[in-house]
Length: 342
Image 1 (cartoon, rainbow, N blue to C red):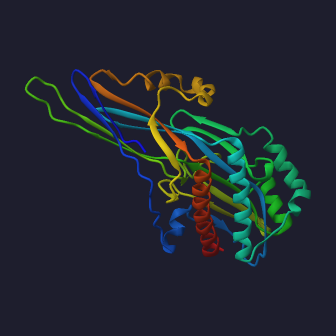
Image 2 (spheres, rainbow, N blue to C red):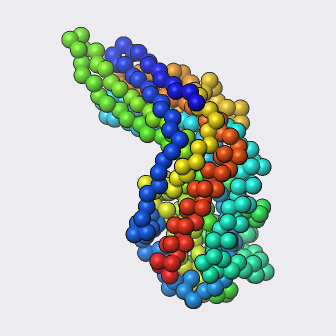
Image 3 (spheres, rainbow, N blue to C red):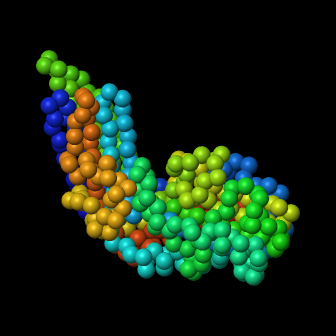
């Protein structure tokens, strides 16, 4: 593992970037915090109450391949940091998604819920498939990053609305059991940034400090860009179940919460020399950002700007182990939430 440090000198400011890799991040959440981790009042008429079967209609994992973070301080400047993941391919990500489905099914069975697949013959399920047929599996957000979505067992990618009306609600009501759709965002990096305004010398030159701390760590990520009041889809991590008597249970991982693995997966961390080949097709969406991204930093209108790009090279099998470890932890929290609210 390589420790990287750099210093960029401008006419009025000194910008220092310090990158310190770390491979462990402890996850500390007691049973009492489980409800706080997920959206409050996420259950209506308790669909899991008295249930002994459950259906998993669509289990989807969103794997981040590039992560972006920006921080700004008025009158000083801003930091933009990109991390790119290398060493994983679509075959590996599909393997992880399928294995997660098996582990989730096993965890549900351990807690008294057998898997039921009769939903496949339902007209409401076919309506859900039809309604979601044009859903994109690649995500690119300029202020967030790049990701690809995989569905367990190559099943159709389905998203439930947050509300209780629609084909998803009819499906649960008709089958009279919890019928679930899961969406889980798997990030590969933790980025912490800090900007400190310095003091000026006799000639008016000021020294400011811009710091970026990079930790290659697998994170199951909560909501990042949308509020709970909106019919959000494709952001963060959530499990939505509908059941008999028009009941529903929405376990939505809250902003600021992340379920992490303490298993190291990164074989190498290094500065990026340019946009990774597989990311070039996304470049148009980030054109303005990318122009500066590899310029080594700029100064505009009396403000400093530090731009960092890093490549994280994963050991494929270590990555798989770390992701499944984090997902196992997430399953524990999800089951605890279901029991506490149903």
